Length: 195
Image 1 (cartoon, rainbow, N blue to C red):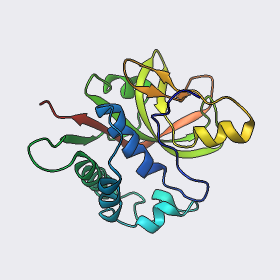
Image 2 (image 1 turned 120 degrees about the horizontal axis):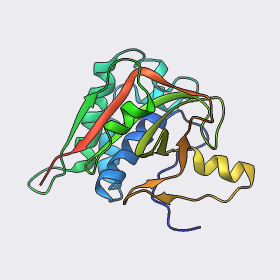
Image 3 (image 1 turned 30 degrees about the vertical axis):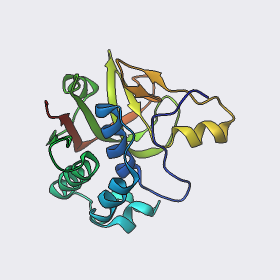
Image 4 (image 1 turned 60 degrees about the horizontal axis):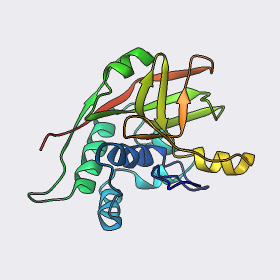
């Protein structure tokens, strides 16, 4: 297997939201997160126990609270980016309402990705209620960094692969051929600040 850049969640957690944030950080910085900063980021999150429970994730203490979701994304990215003059800064903007793949594509750029929640099927998974980082768009297809793809590939006896999309890695896709829906209002544009 080629070097892996997309972080994968474990077998007994519902932490796709957390991993989506980490994979957004990696996509925008091409840097592996420092473990101490990651620990600080997790300790600063609201309801960390919910994230680790595969039956809850963000449907518990976060459910419908867009300000709490956005605040946790901001705090986690700030912790991962570090402190002081060399710190990496990010902005987080929520995309309200029902969105399409084209809406997500319009918000992807050289310094931005979109953290989003979808339900349904992707190219490699079915029956999902899942947070992923959209890294690129090709027509109506969204290329995503998915935290469960590695385990799905292993479980199915498939070869795991990450593909390059303009300097960002993807390992799954949301396509028109697979039935999925973007969860209304649960999409956040993450932009790396210049400098």
